[in-house]
Image (cartoon, rainbow over the protein chains, first blue to last red):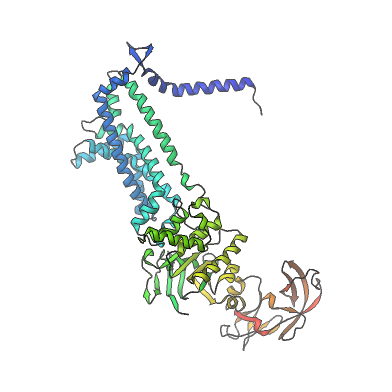
Length: 266
Length: 352
């Protein structure tokens, strides 16, 4: 069936409108970050990088960004190691204890974050761990572990047992099999899972509020600033984060599609 | 020939299912032995036990007089060609083939030289830099074989390696595997469900079903001298005539009392039994040297390429007769009355 030109035009307009409504709000801070904002209105006459210059002097925000990266990277590293170990274990056979372990891994991800956060808070208090960066890292690791574990497990199942058996059959030890055969085939899954885990950790707020000590991560800092109103340098921050996020999504897309397996499964 | 590997009383159960019952099998040094059976017969389980991928519940697997049944996979001097080849997708052909030497800490120069030699042997010298995904099925098969022979194992285990190939390629690979076997003189233990493949390749065939070894012998032995109804039927297209065993290896059937060759494995007198005659052992007309002659009526004639199969109704029992085809057709029509003749040594007696 052929559409009339008018219908095509109307459909295009509706589509455009949907895109503007969806993505317009994202572009506004990017655009305004390059202009001066005074008394609540944007001065369009002159493009400048004042907002970016101001951002470098905003110590509170910079510290929060630093904390966010420390937490995110630590949680990614911890969850990748734990996720790999648990996935290897669960993939090696079927048993009730393995099913239970998998359930425990998924629980913090499936529960409302406030419940996960409260449970962690009570746990830390009961075992007398002072709330600090460490407790935030533990909280984030627990939260992102499910995603990392699941991604690695799916890849492991794709690899299958015979490749591992073949490695042992040819005389390799367990560490040799892991480093020569498993890790190279898991690499893209690990990178993809790491990027996604970092993204989750980056904007995690609810758990962080409950388990933080005096440290602020970026979402907490922004939340706190809302009461006072945002300064223009926050626009610059949003623009930078958007750029970073875009790069991360591209990396994740590149590595989560298992190119290295195409055609190898005849 | 000397015995390389011996299975003694090996048994295995998965849960309540017994997959292997008390298997005794001696693999001779340098032979090409095929384990043949339908799916679920336990043939792959035997291979996996020898390779170390599964442990037996009972019994011993003896290599040089030592029980290796519970040795880890990587300590056994055997290598396996897997059904799905299990090539490493992230390594080149050379990387795959050289892996066994690499994990043993062999010097790079030596690995390179040996990989070159083995790839030449399997005629893949020009593809060393390719990845498995860039190869055809037959080429992957040869990489898997090269990878298994490079460490000079005592025994090569082949788990239905030709199952994924099309008919033409499979025939070529059968020849190829036999050539390699002759060349390197390593013992091959080959698992298959394909009777023709087993007959074409093996020095000895071990026929299995329901976790038991039913018969072990040369291809002609298991083909022409079956010891059981299953083996007689398994090689296809056979004539089995039901009757009651008499004394001195004869069997009383609806078409008369047939004398059979005896080799000590036949059922006792009075037991239900089958007389087994291969269709190609039956002649039309009274041949000199034939001891058994019966009369019947041709009920169908089917041209099948090299051979033509005629079905002759003898007193209500249909007998298949396989004859060499001729371009002008055979002088046989449906309805003809003919005499069928065979030699006593071509007729076997098995328990029903």
